[in-house]
Amino acid sequence: MIAPGESSAARLLAHGGVQRVPSDKLELFQLRDFAGPDLCAELIRLIEKDRRPSTLADAGDDRYFRTSETCDLAPEEPAVQALEKLLFDLNGIDPAHGEPVQGQRYDVGQEFKPHCDYFNPGGEDWTRYCSVAGQRTWTFMIYLNDVDGGGATRFKALGKTFQPQAGKLVCWNNRRPDGRENPNTIHHGMKVRKGVKYVITKWYREKPWGW
Image (cartoon, rainbow, N blue to C red; front, side, top):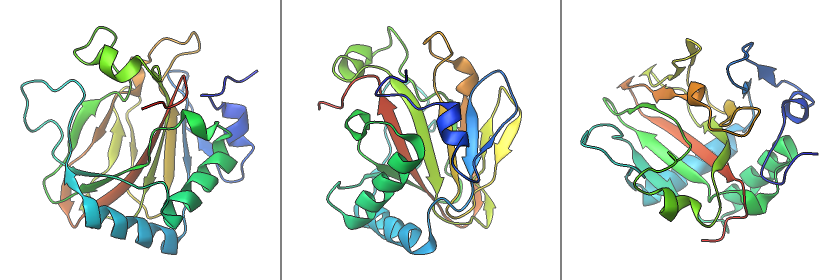
């Protein structure tokens, strides 16, 4: 039985068009044309309206580790509700276990250096971020536009790179089969070389989101 904060490879692959990256290092999938052009355009508009500098949970000394801008999207927005329905139809994860939908904007030269989405046990903000909702389980990321140059997402442990393409979804399980955090999920939001990149990220937790 799948836990409320989890999806599964079987569930995802039952959806037409989902492709799994062939690897035993992590569960990693893509789905082209997940979000339509009108939805992508409206989500971009919302990101532009409320964007702010991105932050890190465990910020180190590298001020340039994550240089994008971020936007928390209001759940009452029709576009956000449409996106949430698409995600639930795909992954079957109880929406109560989802973090608020977040948008990111990357201008020329901006990036998110290699990182994992889960919180480091014993890290500076472990108690703050995981005491209520637990660890992150799955990540679902949607590219909202084509990018003129750069901006790919590279999974270092696999040597697999995804190019930004409007409407394409990439998702992965942040944990190993035994439930431990999976360091093979390390990925790099590479520098944009030309144009602007817009991305939506949706994270899920072990427990209901209670913030």
